[in-house]
Image (tube, rainbow, N blue to C red):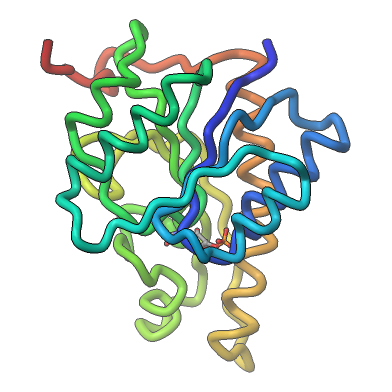
Length: 207
Ligand code: GAR
């Protein structure tokens, strides 16, 4: 099945770009319905526009989280969306938002990529935190999103080494290239096979 996705970004958009490239190379059977950002000036929105994709940029400043999310949901109503794909979206997603994407399979159809081997180094600066800690191996995690920050069911993890002469820049660049291969590959697996969870990993969604 061709996966219909909304991609949420906050900045640069290199993962968005990797997803666009994978779709164009036909290694990912997906359609980007809309690219959403909480920063109307996000460079990633320009990437989307250059590829003729619909965008929706809405600054969150001065708005309550629920109000901001409601406006996004209202905008997304015009599209059919199988999955919300968080790609460097630096905002917490509320439980109320997740309810809109509740799947019969016992999960929310919201997915995230995180720049560390979760559960280590959650939060907004995964590469920096892992690098400063002095890890010898780090990695990238793709996980389902649930009500807890960076704690949803892990779908895929790929490790990468830290070399002795690494700087934060070389270390992060190595990780980012892992991200760019991993995220489209996980999305393609979902497009082909869906998400299959063990009962232990299913979420108890509020009615
Ligand atoms: C990526 O490294 C992504 O893993 C990270 O933000 C960066 C976005 O880069 N996400 C998080 O830290 C989420 N907590 P991009 O805009 O170039 O895709």
